[in-house]
Amino acid sequence: MLEATKRKKTPEDEDEDSGQEPAASDLEARTFTYTIRILSAAELQKSVKKQQPVSKQFELESTDVFDTFKAQLLVQICNALNPAKINFGDYDIAFTVPRHVTDPMDLRDENDYAIMVKNVDKITKNPSAKLMVKQRSVPAPDRVNGKAPRKKSRTANGVDALLNGLVEITISE
Figure: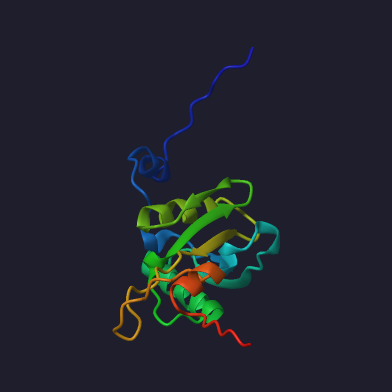
């Protein structure tokens, strides 16, 4: 019969038991690869089969903060779509991590970023994540060049044109 043997606690075990995370300086920085698929608002209007996303890739260290990640992501979006103004809130961003997070999860803030980094860090070889970026549709301005848009009138058919005097009838003998 097998008996359980106790081993002596080491200082590392005590750190694990305390529930504290190791300091950021204690963590080894690893390089993560992010593959991005970017869809503009115009591409999203097309059927799924006809959409052609722009693919980009960049690498960051595992110890980089969310603001660094966000800045690099916005640079990639800017290079792909060339928008007049760029704002993180103008895009829907989701991520997947191979074999760990198979369903797309939203990436909106530091907490979502921490979840993504934690899952990517579980990958021993080639740690990577896939990001899907979708541009939200930009609402059309109400006024163009300071003028309110005109209402579209329907095309006059023959009877309406005759009654409204748009068609002139001449009778020749």
